[in-house]
Image (cartoon, rainbow, N blue to C red; front, side):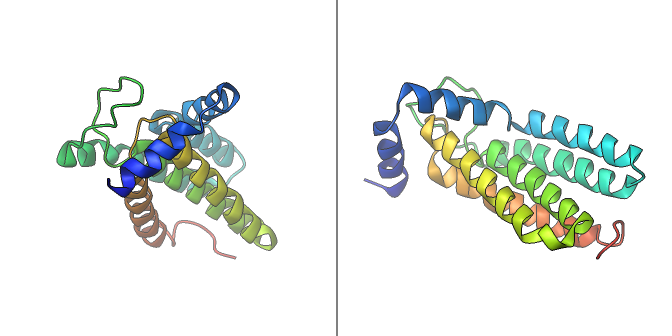
Length: 173
């Protein structure tokens, strides 16, 4: 038995109705579409508060990187686990994990620039949310653990390149 199956079966064996509800809520608000919407709303707030470039970096990075999961899914065309909901897109990489890595990573970076003394707290909170999103996808049986790791990898790669490429757009502390 491979590690993906072992972890997925373990997660499925620990399901409870209250945890199901919580994990569905976590997944419900962190799809690529939803984090792009959150990024747009926060981008508008940053724009209004005269932090235009911060808003652009947050929104464009989340939108462009998140939608990159679509061609990646088409490229790898991996089937989803048989236990989860009937979802008709490919499984690898997890769009939720990828989009959340981008959105919460960019948000933590923006907040860290605005308040450098709390940068570690923002980074830690972002990491915790990103990990929770990935766990929710495995718990719900809609992704293999390696799909989530792939989402983290591609999201982190895009986040690194985007942050490096836009470093001159935003004021550094």
